[in-house]
Length: 296
Ligand SMILES: [Zn+2]
Image: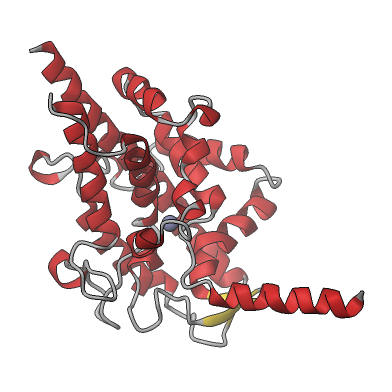
C-alpha cells in the first residue's frame, strides 16, 4: 500500500511540475473582482450578463470568473492569453513589442485577448448580422482577463516567466513569486484580517471604494478617447507595480514574511478594487451601446 501511495504521489508531483505556467489570480481573487464589478453594473448590463452566463451560475457572474483557468488545459490555445511578458528589467510595456505568444504570433496575450473578446461582444450586441462567436465564452474570458491584467506579475519579465521561476519562501512554505501574488497574499490576508471569510474581505474592499480610500479612484473607470476598453494602461501599471513591489526584495531563494506581506497587501487590494470597477465600466460600455442602438 505504501509503495502504491508513494508511486501515486510521485506521479502527482510529475504532473504538477508539468503544468506550464500558473493561472492568474486564484479563485478567490477572480471571485472578488467579479463580485466587486457586480456592484457597479447598470440594469441593461445585468440583464445582458444574466442572459449570457451559463444556468449553473444562477445569475451570478462571479461564479464563472475562474472558468478560463478551469479550461486552460482543454483549450490549450488559450494558455498564453492570461498574461503578457515584458523584456527583462525594462519596467515598461508596449502592445506592439510585447503582445505576442512564444511563437511570435501577434495579439496573443492578455491585452490582445481583452480587445478581442470586447470586439466579439460588441459585434454580437451591436449588429444585425449573424452572431459568429460564442458570446457566453467571450463574456467569461473578458471578465477573467480584466482581472488577470491587473495582477502585477501577469505583465512581468519574460526571463523569469512573470516570477514563476523565482523560487521563494512565503513564511515557511516553499513556493514561487508568481504564486505569492496570485494566491498567497490573499490567503494570508483572509487568515490574518478577515476571519478566513472572503465575503468579509470583499465588503472591506467595497467600503474602501465607496469611502474614496484609494487614490485616483475617480478616473479608474475612464478610458482615453472614449474607447470601450483600454487594457494597455492596466498592463503598464502592472509592470510598474511589479518592479516597485513584486520583484523588489524578492530575489531567488529569499524568504518573504511580515515586511513583504504588510507592504504589498495594499497593492493587491487596490488591484482587486481597480479591476472590479474597470470590468464593470467596460461591460456597461459594451452593453449600453446595444441599448442606444436598440432605441434608434
Ligand atoms: Zn488567468
